[in-house]
Length: 236
Image 1 (tube, one colour):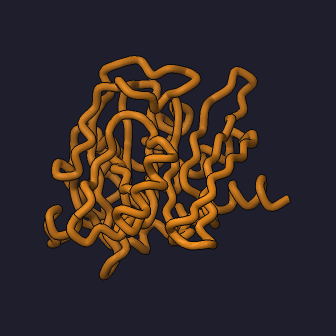
Image 2 (image 1 turned 180 degrees about the horizontal axis):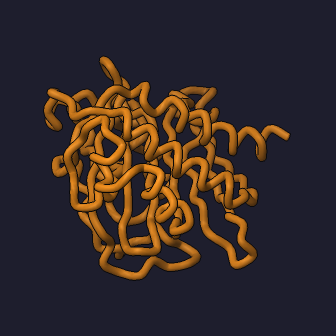
Image 3 (image 1 turned 120 degrees about the horizontal axis):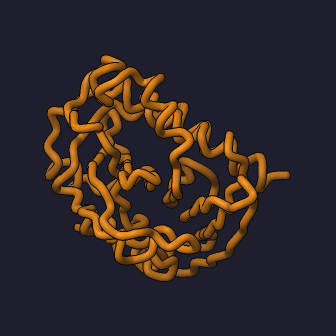
């Protein structure tokens, strides 16, 4: 089976394309989030984050350092989206660099192309807020991390770095009720401002250390928020 692990650094697009051929899906990306010293999952707004979700979002929404989204051939987030990196600009906007993959001619004849646009602060914060609101509606799954990783059917991934040194990653798995694998942690090294997800952040992204949550439908609004950003800028 494909090893489900995200090493520090956004995946090289050529390596991902090769992984599609080797594994039948895009290489999985691990996504984790900081649980504010309380990693237990429940449905209470004050439980998962240690404080109310509203208060938590006040702290986190303005503290985003960088964000990355990884799609796959299922086009869940946006058609042909392979990856997108959101980089904060001094002007107050966000530069979004996107790699898309055209697999219309089959897995052995892939074509990569790139796009970029500038997103507003409100668009990025809307994605971040939808993530946490979705997580508030999840519970810990009885399915083990080993069983979920064996399924190997990736949905999408979201990776966010915060200025306070924490990070959150999320990987969705398309099977059964829909599962999510999450990890928590802090990065040890200062991210490069032009390549925030470059190698050397110093964080543990081993999926086997993650928690399995469900149901996948809790993230429906997150998917809509991400899709809206790409649709507004790429379809016009």
